[in-house]
Length: 297
Image (cartoon, rainbow, N blue to C red; front, side, top):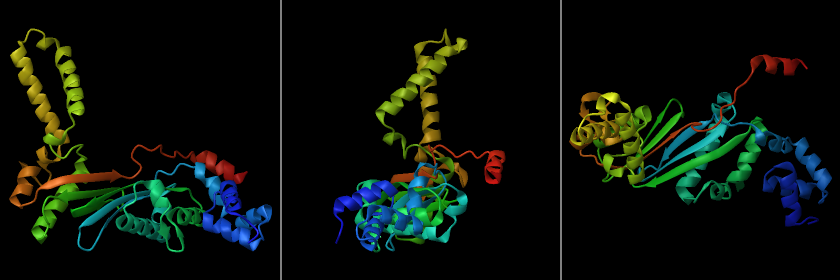
């Protein structure tokens, strides 16, 4: 072997290609760095680095459950365009990544990228896919729940939800009830499971905002403290109804709360996770006229 591990690292830094691809390139070129770079360019792999600066805010959220529904994961993998998100090879990659998360329970995305996937690693497989498809992609985040899990995906991977029940969802009725709750989470996007799970700092912040709103209204200036306190309680209850899943009106039956619906089905939820594709990410804004002009040039 006419090259070292440091050479592989250097080639990887220069090209942005996967470690296994760099090792193969150096092997094929007897350790010649320049020829190895040319080898990777000829294979179309060295282009991956150039794409790493592009905005990737499309993609899919994948929900994956084990057959016994005791482990569930959500994975968000982003791409530049929705077109690529519909690519079979891209979707297959996302599913394989989800399976790795189920099996290996990595601590974070960097740990996930270092795990084996086929003959490579997750990170190297991602780099190879970027080069092959021609768009920047990114494994953004994942969540893994062990317990009694149910999932729901909306809009072809635009939103994914996992819910965890306290006891086994051992009947079709219980599982469907949990799935109904997951659908509600997808649609309404509650911030918390219940009023008991609202962090103290969040509640105090909300109370401060609500009190400022009350005092801003001149009509409240002469009202006694007891009345102001009742107004505050009413506003906090409204906050719970809007932001806590179990206190929300059930979308399929507005006459009852989600908590009552689940209770009637013998289901108690203890946790949920919701991912929405691209939330919080900068969105790519294309100027069609500029794009056409650049193509003509």
